[in-house]
Amino acid sequence: MSFRNAWHRESSTVTCIACGESVARSAAREYDKYGDRWDREDKSFEYLCKPCDRERCHSPREGLEDRLVESAVGTDSPEAFVARYLALAREAGSPVQEE
Image (cartoon, rainbow, N blue to C red; front, side):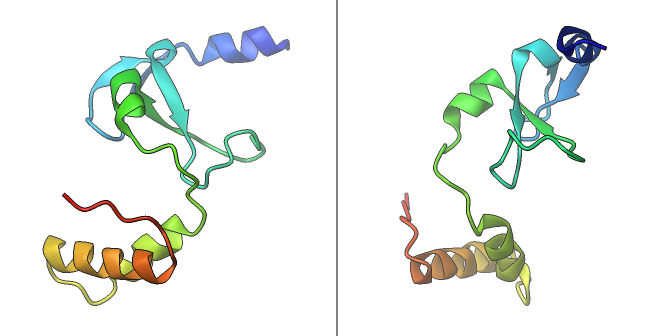
């Protein structure tokens, strides 16, 4: 099987993980929550529609998944989760932009 045939197989519809819209695979961008979309072995990808992909932060995500999990421990509201996440991000030296 050639590369072209493997890619052609993926011409189905995918769901954007940010907005929930169904879009053609060709109108979406692959998203790898671990930040290593080039290592394709044993991976499945999530997808973002092109507008949502343009709006997201394209900064490195090293440690993000662990920080998100740790932020959820012991929190009982979205506000508590966000406050804990921001505190952990500051501790890690990550730039935090608050609005």
